[in-house]
Amino acid sequence: MKSCLIVDDSKVIRMVAKKILQDLEFETEEAEDGKAALEACQRRMPEAILLDWNMPVMDGIEFLHKMRDLPGGDQAVVIFCTTENDIEHIQEALEAGADEYIMKPFDSEIVQAKFSQVGLI
Amino acid sequence: MKPEDFDFVAKTVKERSGLVLTKDKAYLLESRLMPLARKRGLNGLEDVVEKLRKKDESLIREVVEAMTTNESFFFRDQKPFEQFENVVLPHLLKARANKKHIRIWCAAASSGQEPYSLGIILKENQSKVQGWKIDIIGTDLSEEIIQKAKAGTYSQFEVQRGLPSKYLVKYFKKKDEMWQIDPSIRGMVEFRVHNLLENVSQLGTFDVVFCRNVLIYFDQDTKAQVLERIAKQMPSDGFLYLGGAETVLGVSDKFKPIPGHRGIYGLAQAPTSAKEI
Ligand SMILES: C[S@@+](CC[C@H](N)C(=O)[O-])C[C@H]1O[C@@H](n2cnc3c(N)ncnc32)[C@H](O)[C@@H]1O
Image: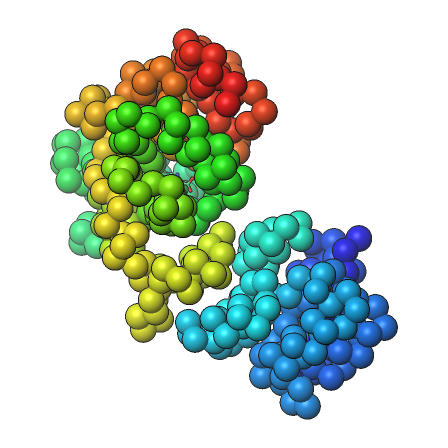
């Protein structure tokens, strides 16, 4: 079973994502901001990270930069999942080292399409 | 809907498009015809059927179009497009080195995601195809869907199914809430209305034919006829792509699977070099 860390400050979003990912047979873990996510990655680096952009304490981009510097951090597949839906944001995320980008609102089809695109399923 | 009316509409749709409507699709027929009746100010399905019986051509066309399933996405199933980029295209670049001309046909192009995905691949391989003429023709039975394909404008949902974000950033512009494909890709594809049940010789011959996710809606005879017609438009070393749930096996002996490349077929009488790419 592959593991996916769901990083989002909204509990509802985390719940929806968790359900979708569990149906896709991922083992999930949750974090409510970048800092908590970084700690989770230090404990155990997940195979995949579904990452929100705007969060209190530490945002998605800052987390991504720091996470990539952790041991094994270059291996994790990072998929942004955020309301930011313009070219500039997507570009910035990809340049920061994200593997894919989901624009909210999302559903199971989009998550499945993106995860299979990056070879996670 | 009365059973005899259903049978009549199903027969008309099958004759015009090949699409098979089994009895369990009666609900689908009704749900798609109701809006059509309303649009035309007709009093329900009975009026629609009556007009169909009187051979109202434009209504017949609308009914047939309404019964098509147009779902499509960019780089659908991924693998076929990887094969196109890594196997078929390099093969053709060698095999057609004299002519420097390749023709590709998307025979059920729907809203254009399939031909545009091929356009993106070619653009990404620009240096290799420099000086080549590569035609991509997208055809579909539905006039309405061909208009959408030509516009090259997609919803946020549509651009998130199959299209890698790096291509979204590179080849699309956001216009209000929609995403518009770049003119450089749009200009690579020519769209036309064409019915697979009709003669295709006016379209010319094609080195690669994508006929994906349409044969599944046809019966065995229609599948065989369509494949036969396609075979006639292909040189002996051409390539045919079918959808994930489609095959030539048991349907037509014109094509043979290409060993090691699932989903791609070559003509049965192809030279061995093409059969074993
Ligand atoms: C499910 S879509 C497939 C789109 C694309 N090839 C793909 O794989 O994503 C099927 C398309 O076939 C078209 N179609 C159905 N019957 C047809 C016919 N007789 N001739 C041409 N197109 C037809 C429909 O209008 C529809 O757009």
